[in-house]
Length: 394
Image 1 (tube, rainbow, N blue to C red):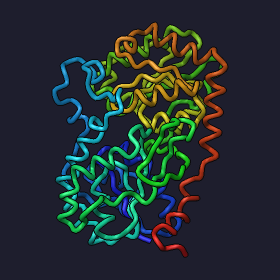
Image 2: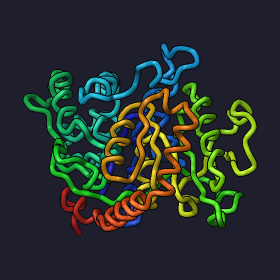
Image 3: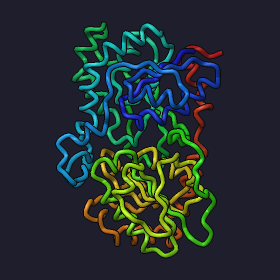
Image 4: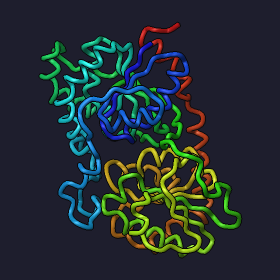
């Protein structure tokens, strides 16, 4: 079986699919990743073959456009999706697909896949599947507040372009939706553009060597990880890191482990003896030594922390991060702090982490969520159903 993976050009959108690609390769199937250089480079780093199309997207550049000096996107009132309108999240990818679908289709037709796996906002994958008459599987990379709305929006705004490629009438939808969000966090009104199968989230936080710090639990102190994502520091986020560090240093029984690119270490300034600032490393290499985590609510960080059963203080910045924060708080796993002014108050950070460490219900709920996730089918267990879907069983 030949499986083509496609993704919008943000590495965090592609990362949740990597364990499935590995599982398919291990089962003897051919895998190819098609995407812009942002995705192709991530695929090659993960040991997967890839073909490039288009130019770099550069999410930091897109987010910093018209960003006021010294303000994070959430402080400027931009890039948060507090409502359920699809436009904030979907419109950029609709426009993106308009200019890349022709090239994507040509490259895909040359490789001739039996199955396409894509993120739900890579709308050109629906064209590939429809024209080549192969099933398309949506692999969710985020909590899904919009259900089938993005698909309907794509049908309205891209239908004529699809028709020019021989797909008149309704847009072909996904044959299957794979969702790594634990069912208990999806919400009672969760909807989808196709039939849904749950898949276990296997943490893939990039590649890197084993950390050079002690990954054993730090004795009498509680280790608290601080991971605010790959974009926050570059989006005027160092004052936020500073408030988090200052808040954690008020807790005398806490050791803070802060992941921050080295280029920003000097800007952060001096830290206390029980705070360690390190280059970003894969979270799965050390989270088992932590008692809690402070993070931004990005999907990869959130689900990795959930898989390790950690209580969480969530400081959402962009996109759907505020929705993750709300769902985790409702589940009793996290303290959510969506207001930018409160995020910048060290006393608020101190109080939030203290609640996580001293209230037994938080670690209990986090452990229960980890057990739920561990009981979902692994990517390897879903290879067989994907073979059947593609008509390649056996």
